[in-house]
Image (cartoon, rainbow, N blue to C red; front, top):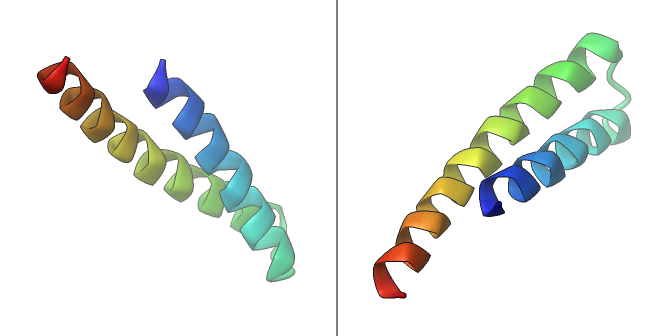
Length: 54
């Protein structure tokens, strides 16, 4: 659940970041995908840590 939520948040933040830098649609998709993957990896790490301690 954590991974899904963080992935969606990452995609939104990536899209907004590219919009702020005045990128075109492909820039927005690339930033969205990169942030999506980065936040997904962070979510997996957080999930593993939480599962280890609980």
